[in-house]
Amino acid sequence: MARGAMPLRITGERVEALDQTALPAAVRYFEFDSVETVAEAIAMRVRGAPLLGLVGAFGMAIAARTAGPDAATLHSAAARLRAARPTAVDLGRAVDQSLQAALALPEHERADALWLRACDYLACRRAEDLALARRGLELLPRAARVLTHCNTGPLATGGIGTALAIVTLGHERGLIAHCFTTETRPLLQGARLTTWELQTAGVPTTLLPDTAAAGLVTSGQVDIVIVGADRIAANGDTANKIGTFGLALAAVRARLPFVIAAPTSTIDFACPDGAAIPIEFRPADEVGGYGGQRWAPDGIAAYNPAFDVTPADLVTAIVTERGTARPPYGASLQRLLEGG
Ligand code: MRU
Image (cartoon, rainbow, N blue to C red):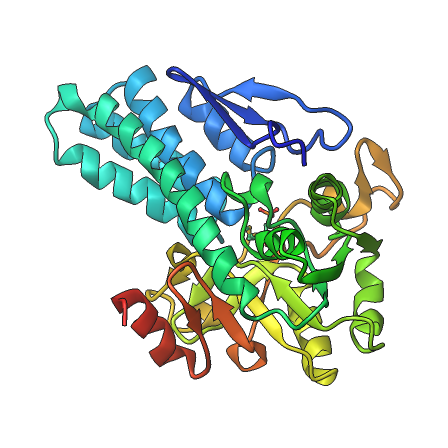
């Protein structure tokens, strides 16, 4: 991707976000100038689990500066931001951590402290993405032909990405032969964003309809499937973009590795298994049309979950910035978090 087209642009105390709904046709930034602009943007103009955590942290800093640093204002900002999207645990976690950190300080110190905290979070994202990608390289077969889903590149994290960073870094090191990416209906993150990032990185790329993925995976043209995550339960069950579960089933059928790449911030020990992960359901309109064009008849009902849960027994490995977890995940994820 154009290296300058990062999802957040920070100049002094101004935060601007790239409107991801306009990509790749237009590179357009808008300013985060209130909690409301941040919360509305989280509904899809900014997206990707790690980036949502980062945006949540900046949202709290903006709340303190623009609405006030008192406890009631910060609590209400946190509630608004947290509720903007439910599945990615990074968002609620970053917002809650910012809230608790601010409340521990005198009111006059809170706005500056929240701002510094958000800037630290950004630096941490960059470092963690790089560490994760380096660990992910160890899982790549020689001249790997990778299939990925949705968008997990720089646009989704603010760093170099997660699953897609393994591909782009692997390409730089001569380890990647090809990357297949699904279009990722209904909002086309794969077709609009991942292709754009891969093309800019010079990775040989093929785009496919989601419906072609199972056939491709079982055809001998793919060596490994690598995707991101929005929330990983304590037992390794993983919520990610709708369609991930089907890719895992196809990979297992083809005896291919199915790898999750996500920072440890995505692991939620409060969810014992996938059934406890809240899944976001999005408007029916998104299925019946796109970009102002409608193809389904008016009034048709649509089933539109934004995410599905892949059961842990289909997952070959979960690679994080701290190391790679293998089944059984209950114990291996715990060890990773404890630094063992
Ligand atoms: O609805 P989105 O575009 O926010 O969904 C994004 C995904 O599902 C990604 O795979 C996940 O957040 C990981 S991003 C590194």
